[in-house]
Length: 364
Ligand SMILES: NC(=O)c1ccc[n+]([C@@H]2O[C@H](COP(=O)([O-])OP(=O)(O)OC[C@H]3O[C@@H](n4cnc5c(N)ncnc54)[C@H](O)[C@@H]3O)[C@@H](O)[C@H]2O)c1
Image 1 (tube, protein in one colour):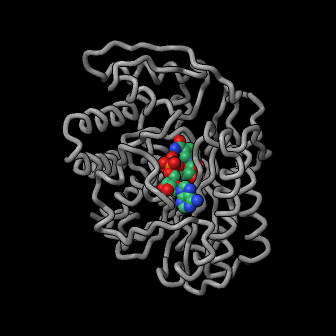
Image 2 (tube, rainbow, N blue to C red):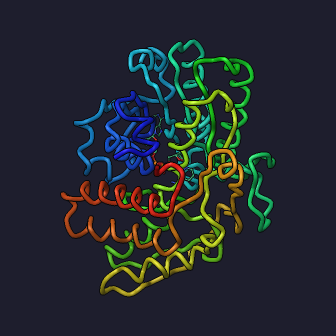
């Protein structure tokens, strides 16, 4: 196998924070197929069941439990000596951010500051990608995609913390990471990621899967809300493309990039629920209107022209393929959870093959 990712990450030391979470587990699984030397830092294993636990990857990586705000983070990083860092550790849920706003701000903002602060004197060349969110934009309820230069905002603690992380990253770069610094920094904004292995609460796919597996009605808070749905491998391919690009050229420092789906993937919550239910055997769909007490927005869309023009990146999958891959994973899990890691790896390989057949730039 030789594609851009293999050439870039093979045998490289890669630190992933938040590696036990939904996106983190897919990322470390992919990095293992590239034979990277992976270290993960996470405070806990956030869900049960857990994709991370089922992979048994803890035996094959340097698996660390540590708070991102720990004052020993710098010492730890100096010991790990990463060539690449993907910072995903976060309190990632809007509903939880209403229950515990201080923890959300502390993890998402101060945790990001602690990581950046730990890298100021780091001497080895390293690319550090900071994962924020599509929710960092001031949502104007318009139908156009947000561009990287649009106003930041956020009317709930999660979104506000992600917008603040963006401001913080920008100020750290301007103050401490000049263009000739060995550490190259970028932030990435993607949203509404779906795929197998997510059991977080108050996210639509896990909510439907939980309701289906226990024969209960699924509560839909905001059925007509549109979101930029994408399979988890899509933004990950964007993060890996950006990191590969930044490891070769010093042209990018302190910039942000949107990674979102094509326009035809902007569907409503209700569209997604009906599409996934087609794959679920036997039981019929029972839906209940939940309350939208957190005032979630109705429209959210990203403009990804910058990723296309700078990195030649676009997403790979159609909406139907995204749903099919997601449901194939969950059905395989409920059939035989012990073998689920094989499914994860085969989906990564299939995704790479599909990207190659569609001539995606990173797949060569
Ligand atoms: N899943 C999505 O749809 C989505 C959309 C936009 C942005 N994001 C962002 O992508 C990143 C990953 O999201 P996810 O869905 O995998 O999240 P997740 O909730 O599944 O996982 C969060 C991870 O962060 C770790 N973590 C939490 N608090 C920590 C702390 N104080 N110290 C160290 N580790 C800590 C957890 O242990 C876990 O490994 C997050 O930054 C999230 O905000 C996710």
